[in-house]
Length: 355
Image 1 (spheres, rainbow, N blue to C red):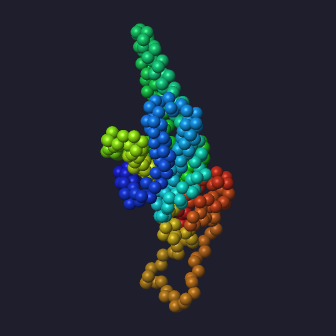
Image 2: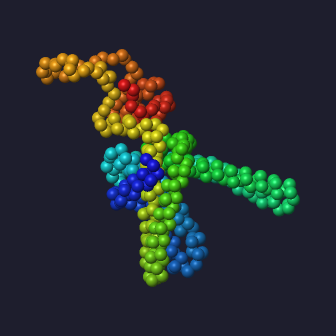
Image 3: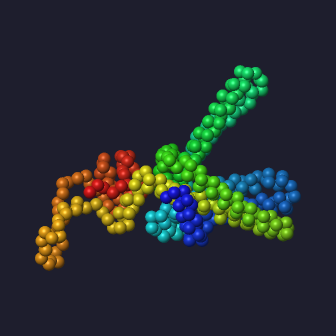
């Protein structure tokens, strides 16, 4: 798929399965709206921001925020799982999208923390170089100008590297919930799958940002109007509902698009489509085709109901069909969805076996 194909399929999937998609991403917002309503009501009743310093209220906020972070990562994974099942021909429900992801919530948080740590460290180094360039530039000497220019150029390069790190981690969610790869290995797997997709990922991200801006403008303005027209807690709650509605509507765009990019990358790099085409058509590796014989010289077999025996062929390495394939190193069965053998770690290709 081209970038345009991915965006087109994203819009079509979103439109055709709108309620299902909204149901998946709306789960974390069941906490966001009460938090916003609680904060707004507390400030309105107390008339002072100091009311938020109440220890009991702080404890409630902390628990709700932790639960919100966990649910947010779960919803990202459930959306990726749902799109994945539809891509492979399934019909997921909200529960079947969430149930395999429930045990991976903390794995998602940990993987993104490692990504943030790696990218943040590089970004911090770029900021340090830029600050040093500013200090040296203040010397107002020829040598200082040269050193400042070198440091500034180095800062730009380092910041570009940090951006590259963040962009190449965009498929971490899909890797964790689809391939069940955890921690730093999930980041490295995302880095591999994003090879050659750097600019495509930026275009998809830009598309998601534009959609977010448009939806925010369309929905946040009515929310502000409602808050001004309806005073008190009711107005605050209505404003929060309208504000978060825009977030619910825009969140699936990037999730669907990057899940499609994940499969497109596997198709390009690992011939994943060949394996799935064989499975969908009911094909399985079998004996080689018999030699071609001219129709004029081919003898007519007598009518018989007994099945014909295929020609034998030399023994080869074991192969699996259907939902599994066989590791060429240790002979273990490997799910089609997984790129490597879980027993010995050998890369198992997704292409059809050679006839």
